[in-house]
Length: 376
Image (cartoon, rainbow, N blue to C red; front, side, top):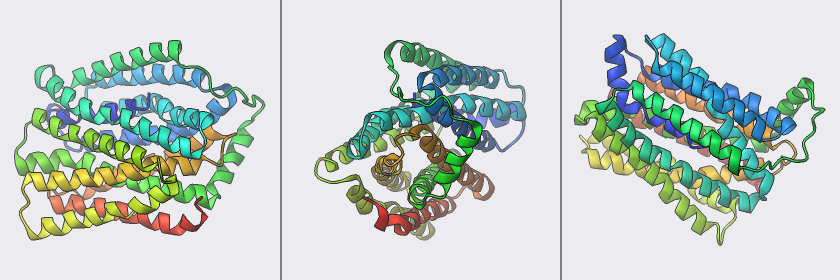
């Protein structure tokens, strides 16, 4: 379920040039930013609802909305309709993201949760591995609209599997929770320095990574002349980077706490971002150097994110859905800002993209420095 986000983002990336050509307008990156906005807003709804009514009922609703949105994308007649329907698709797809994290918190304590989130990251990483490559083939042979038909089929399969396999994990829910209680819970979490610092850390880390995902279609294809299918295969390497990070994180957690792993690796991604920036300013970098530094950047983010999630949700067992929702909304909001920044400033050069990535990673490091003494 949590892989639906990466699949929905990555599968249609190879079709960006075709979408702009068919609609006769630029700015297809806005459709991706719109999807992230929908993810951010929708999570704020599903989190409290899952705390009140359980984890499974909102998932059925979410899958249904997701499929309606994907169908609208497949039938879009202009960029505006595609953007709107991407928001609808996101409003459904975010259910699996927020509720998946809450289920992990329901069943696991912090150290076990870090291992569970690492395993989840490894599974989710299959999305970026497979989706762009599959998307490249689909776009080449069937057109970009067919990528959304495939997403409908995937969502339907997951919903049927969830119905048969997933058991309810939130059995001690309070059905008397009111709308005012929900707002107070969000207010309390927003004033929690520990929780918000970790949520911002996660948001800036993922946002810096999303900068590359958003900007790469223009930067890589224009500078290195890759076809849609070649670019799809290249983007698929991002998933391998996350799988590598997950394997290394699982090994590290055998002897280290989530806090220790976080403290060791949170400073690596800013160094890699600035290395790519400086090298791209000084030299005309070959593709393999750009990809190598970018993959190492992704690995470093992958070492950080599962541990941040576990540490942020650990104190909030009774309201895990609400906490997961606010953390996810913060992450999605910052990721949206990163996508907008790329849409505005991306001039097709590697150094501009690297500068935005380095800035986001540096802000994540500052969030860690702000809260490191309170981590346990």
